Length: 482
Image: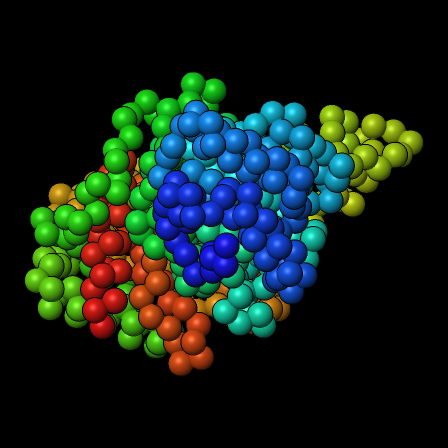
């Protein structure tokens, strides 16, 4: 019908479908064709099942025509899932050679939520192998390119999902965030990315990297779409032992309240050295805008910030070394035959895992070993408790905490691959929220002189995504006013 779907938000597409101005089938065909056209250049998708997506769209259209459709604010909207989430009958690779040939035998909790909301899953997106990375360069299927500048990284590990939304290959996508893997790609690609509270969205069917940190989170073009998709995705799941049985608000209903009664904390530790000047300027301008809007700003301190990167990489790598022990060539995926069982384990893991995954398994095994467990892992857990306490104290003075999402804009391919520490420091502002289990959102707040997006991060109290989205919505409107 001549609709320019790539210019529309998810809710606008759903409204057109509900009004009969377009069909689910037409919508899916448009985005699938766009994926086929753009993916060779951007490499955002690892797999696309056109037949399944079109069959699903036809089923939704028939339900509409018969009057039996269970309507939702996202009915008929295409969505992509990061390829570490199970979709029954489709490949789940985690962007690793070690899962070659594996097809999911069940649907993840997030898959079922998307289907219940009437969405159409169009494909599985590229990622850093097993979600380990900050640039999406660590994929067995090749790197994802940033749609804003294809010479730059999209951020990781959920770079495929972020690039897919930024390039209008799909209006919505889901990624996973362990230390910033939703928020960093959102910042680099100029869209909105949310890490909800730990336990808010089911992790059932999410392939584990670091189980006490992993959380599924959505990408959207703006905060209103984000509120709608979070309402659809959140909720208790008895199959996930970390899922929390707490009611899910209608997040979109409260957006208009903005920041009227909320205080924003500005942590001095997040505004020190190491921030690129365009990022600092954009955040300073934003803070000045909030001050002009008479938003109450509060200076706060998070003293344990300087330990967060070290603590995160000790805990995350320790959990990764345990979780990835299951990939041994026996149960599923790649198997490299050898003369003995131990040789087969070694040959399979050597051939199947990439460099970054091997590095993290080795580091994790080291900190869990008998001689170093107390010196590293146990001590890291104690400091993690102090980090949580820092936030609890800070939230006595404020309702939201504002910081840059990243100290830099998107960097060039290869710029940090030879220096793992420099790469890990990309997450310096994002790792604290997962360590404390808190929700955090990244949204665009400007661009550097080269046109690369800059992201601002808001962190909120545990299970207070409502205030987080209200703050994000206020900032969007403020920036739109200029």
